[in-house]
Length: 371
Image 1 (cartoon, rainbow, N blue to C red):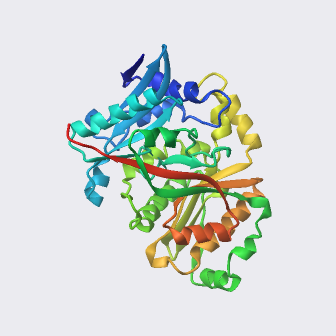
Image 2: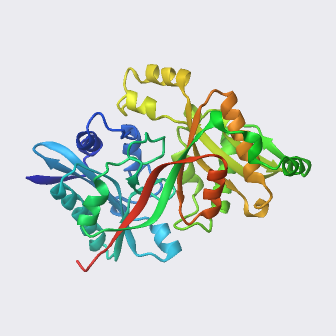
């Protein structure tokens, strides 16, 4: 017998651990972060509880699956969609459980008059997105989705179709010849034109993050599904950044006082998060210090160049600088968040830098009939 719980954080948090088992590569967000994400009082993405809910599937007294149902109003308005969304879809290999969860999310969207449901979004396209469809054997980095190999089949069995293929990448820093990434004459020309790396320190971090938000909004404006991020939303996502960020492995470029480009990277926190069971506890500080002493992997959260400065070789310049900094800081590998198949320029840049495919992802959608 399967039953659903709604808005029960404890069972929602526990579900993927039960569904995938202790030996899986799945890494949960910290429970405290999940609580922030799923709160209209705390998360500026939502204006009220009417814009989202979340369900847990219970079987034999144990949570074995979960899903969110939500709407991203700004995305619908900006792109002309009439969609509700599902996210955080984690589920045991059980068709009945999947049908109950997906049916609940569909009913939620249908009751609000939406014509389509799409996911996985945790909770927007600028956060974790997609259902994993390949590379299940590869360990995920922070901000990368990992899901069991049976999830695509469960979605398809419930009438969902895949679209918008994406790939995440990993780069072995030790094997990259950073000087081959750029035209050195072009690089010197940029420096002569006034392009400089702005200092990133604890005291300048707030300013550099606001620089990054500017870059994000201007450089991604034409990307599919993108919605400009407000200062409040950006600060919500970056709330813990000052504690986890390694200033040596991010870079912001200015040109004559104007922000021009940025690459924001952080240490891969997944080993730390997994070690402390994704919960704050008495041993959390010890696990964090241990992680800081041994971190070898980093992840690029985003990189971008203002449109006015694109096509000048700034991306390769930043990448060469960043990988050199990472190598000097002792990092060995760097991962990246998803790149869509249609983004040919970014795919070429990843290939040129020696990055190797890590995970394959797709979005899944379904048309919703009348309530």
